[in-house]
Amino acid sequence: MQGVQEVLLVDDNPADISLAQEALAECKRQSNRQIKISSVVDGEQAVAFLFRRGKYANQVRPNLVILDLNLPKKDGRAVLKELKSDPELCRIPVVIFSTSQANNDIVRSYQLGANCYVSKPVSLKSYFATLQSIEAFWFGLASLPQEGE
Amino acid sequence: MNTSTEKIEPPATKLRVLQVEDNPLDVELVQRELRRAGFDFTAAVVQTRDEFICQVQAQCPHIVLADYNLPQWRGMEALAILTHENVDVPLILVTGALGEVTAVECLKKGVTDYVLKGALARLPVAMHRALREKKLRDQRKEAEESLARKVEELARSNQELEQFAYIASHDLQEPLRMVASYTQLLGERYRGKLDETADKYIGYAVEGAQRMQTLIQDLLAFSRAGRKEPAKADADSNAVVKDALLNLTASIQESGAIVVCDDLPVVAADRLQLGQLLQNLIGNAIKFRKEHAPTISVKAEAAGDFWQFSVSDNGIGISAEHGEAIFSVFHRLHTRTEYPGNGIGLSICRKIVERYGGKIWVESTPGEGSTFKFTLPAGAGQAKGASA
Image 1 (cartoon, chains in turn yellow, cyan):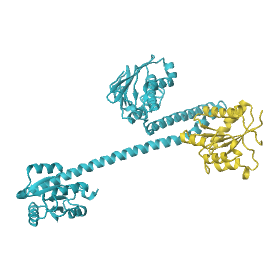
Image 2 (cartoon, helix red, strand yellow; image 1 turned 90 degrees about the horizontal axis):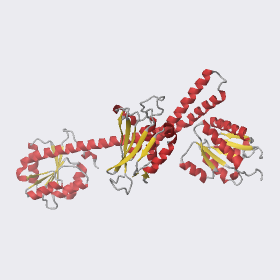
Image 3 (tube, chains in turn purple, cyan; image 1 turned 90 degrees about the vertical axis):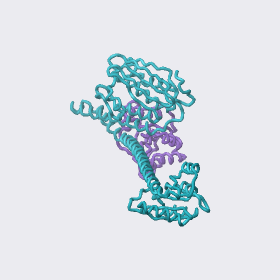
Image 4 (spheres, chains in turn orange, green; image 1 turned 60 degrees about the vertical axis):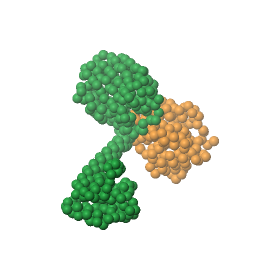
């Protein structure tokens, strides 16, 4: 049994973050895994959080990043690029979670090193189911690198 | 193109005559004839090719009167220059002698008329006719140009509208997703915790938001049907219809529908769009059924370079007065409780069919059934009329 799983949600819409938190809270109840969710609302905050800069200096590195593509200040693609160019941070799995279903967004994301691309479902039911699948896959099925090794 | 030459000058403007003539006496005789006929004109006289070009470019004459034989060049060359300069000016040959054969040849080449110097009295008549014809030509050209402009404007505004529909529906999806999700969440988390009225109202909000989501998705599908470039590859209708039936499995089973498909052709259309088209039509045939299980048949027959498909049912049918309207966006003949839907399906069908240069229409007897027919271009390598 692993310890607490840290998830970083990057989304400019607080309503979307709440929704994802609700969904992940439901996951927690079902999977009995311990999940801690942090969230930031723009690309600059996301980078600062991940590189532990400024007020995020004491942050624990997340085990999973759920990243929206269209973000203010720094675009999700730029965040992804920066993250995947860093020798340390590149091993953190990044799930792109965007409403865009455009093929060029999907292709570009994988080119930049996204670990998977998931379209935000429109209905609440599939939204919850999707986040449950993401949680189950990354924290249940996949083996993740242990932090600090 | 020099646009000033195309304008029809108001009568107040003097008629600009360009004479190509080396004989001063003939120049004078022609001018006298014009004055006598009441022409209010200014005349420029040129003798050489270069002078002619210079005058045509600078003065934009209304009419050219050219001698057939000149010492350095020929009147017919003037015509060639006008053609080359893309200037539409009537040219009348004014000449001492011109055999009938030569005359006919000149007219064929585009000379407006010819007048013999010995019969100059005919010149005014010839000029009036030439100028009248030119005016009509200009008017027709202007009408054609204005029509072409309108067509272009219409195409552009249509395109803008489609773009707008796409962007609007795409961008509306996001906030709407929030409204739908949170009203649903409210409904789930707080059912029975408020009061009955609250539950009912939340139910209305959830339903409204969900309906709007379907509507927006349909609108998006509609605008995408127009945006997508027609595919280069052909589609085998047999495989496409099979997929469509697979997608309709639930409603086929629920209604007990029997769908009979003939051997269908290969058509020059995008596979996905053809699928959408057939699925919409077959889906409608199932939806608008009578009490009993519907029987639906899908057929195709050759029609020149096109295939004419038909999807027939024994459902409720459509009265003739609605035959055309059902293909327009949001047009519904029934209430949502009778038959669900947004009234977008058939407009998508029409858009797809028209994208490939085809047509779609309905033939129906109310109470007995409908046959939707549409045409699509035959796929490459399909022998015309090689109907199965």
